[in-house]
Length: 56
Image (cartoon, rainbow, N blue to C red; front, side):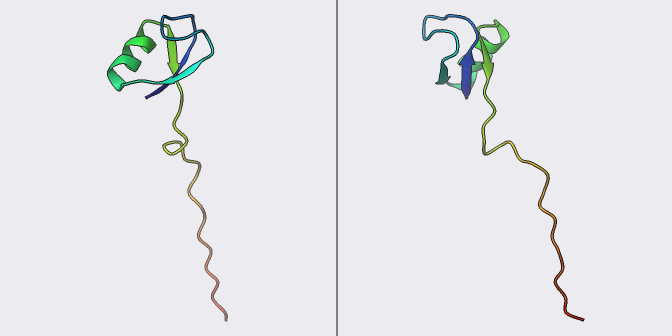
């Protein structure tokens, strides 16, 4: 899980991003020390429109 520290923490200053286990990331988010960084692969926009190119 990728996180961004909101406040200074023992593992990094505020504003730093880090890759931690899901367990530790959830604890840091719940305690207010960090916020999750959305994964680019998981974030998807609207599905692409399929166009039919039939010649009539």
